[in-house]
Length: 312
Image (tube, rainbow, N blue to C red; front, side, top):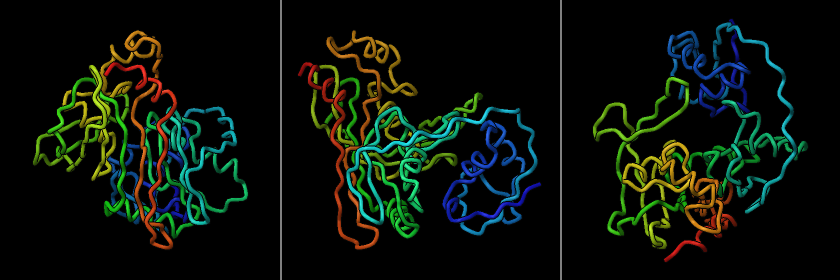
């Protein structure tokens, strides 16, 4: 039995992510099972997988038997396009197809590559997350004080996050607010999924998405989407539930369309093989000065190319 004390680098992490990092090579199904069974304790009490850890918390981790695994190759050093940087935090333009951090079958992500590229940095921590398939504005704190201040803004819904999403079909301009609870669950293979549940359901969490038509095309609509709650896969699930899945979404989208897009058959002249969801703008207050900031990430070249080939 191991008793681990949460340090500054791990403070604020979810318990499941902390365990996945601690029990290197452990499958997610095992981690969730030992948490559900009560074998993992936080400050001598039972805990849930999504519980946030605080600095100084004591985590009791039971012994687990893991198959011998080869050590993964170290993360390559990589910088990403910088949208803003000072001594408190930086904002990068994350490309699609790159995870924000390692784990769950991913050896490394943005944060590991940045740390490798900046060995002199004493503190680099993700402020928030983006799905691997989503591109756009991503914040990384360079000080503990900045991390706390920025995460508080996210928690208190004081940040304005706007995404560009291309969806299938003609989105009705009158449909501007989606207020439907979401429930996160694991499939039998341990894959994380989300679904809409009935209002008032005990297992659902209220989720609010604001939608505005940016440009209508023949058979498609480009949307400006602002989220008032930051639930896992919120935009993807809400838009699909409304009957307008995001182009290229492999989890919740139109699979036949996605294949045709990737082969260049859906839109002649363009092979589109990613999800068209881009975190294009983030409004926030500077964590140290309180000054208002608006950070913008330009639409990726492949997304612009697809829009240029869509019939109006």
